[in-house]
Length: 372
Image (cartoon, rainbow, N blue to C red; front, side):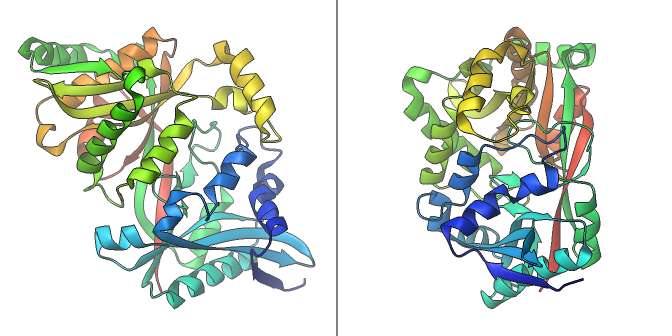
């Protein structure tokens, strides 16, 4: 068997190969939802994507006998280093054939690059950050990933752990069903909170979209910065993502919690477009738009992407009320079931909230780390 060679992505043709390589691994898997090629291109666009204003990335391709057999990227995120005061670099965009020598060569290349940049540990997968594709799927391979969640074959776990990466954190994806969510215990708790009258929930005002985005960004920066691995997005990053999401959000599913008129938290839920995008096997934009328009009524699931309240309000019941209203509005808008993902295993308030709604862990993702 010929040797594995690793080379950096150096040309536009290389970038195209890098983007399309997952089809080699998962193209025939009916559970995998092909990403939009346009979105993948934007994700690695180091000229225009605002993430790269404070981060650096090198992409690599693995070849054997002139054939591409794997890919990986190494990322140094300066904002992560500043936020957590740790010299941790990241690897992401990992895909490879089921061959340990290929995986080892890819991880060696990424880690060598990170070490040369002064990093002391390698963590991943983050593609390219905690705010994008994050985590390696280790449970739930028979289930379609929800919108903006990742998927990989089971053997990736073996390749990663055999190289020497160890678990750093697990991330949970909870399955939620309206038949179980609105149970007696949950209803009683929310009734008490409602009677107090201090906490109210309102929908986002799309006529004031820019102002609402600024408000949500402020809440997100204050409320999530202490979570494990979190890095607050810059204003440019937040606006970049908000602009992309504006065309696919259901404004009835984005809610803001207020206490005596003061914003204290928010929740963002998206229709699970993957229910119709799973058949867009080529990853092209126009067929995707066609499916999202003409097969819209087939979508009966949603994903709670983010939900929470400021730390000082976490013991007031506001979080439970926010969960309740999110579920109620989802059902009202035609989504009786869905997924809450992802939730850090050490995020006790959010895990308790999901359990209060009778959520069941349907998928588990893992973040790995290794000293350099």
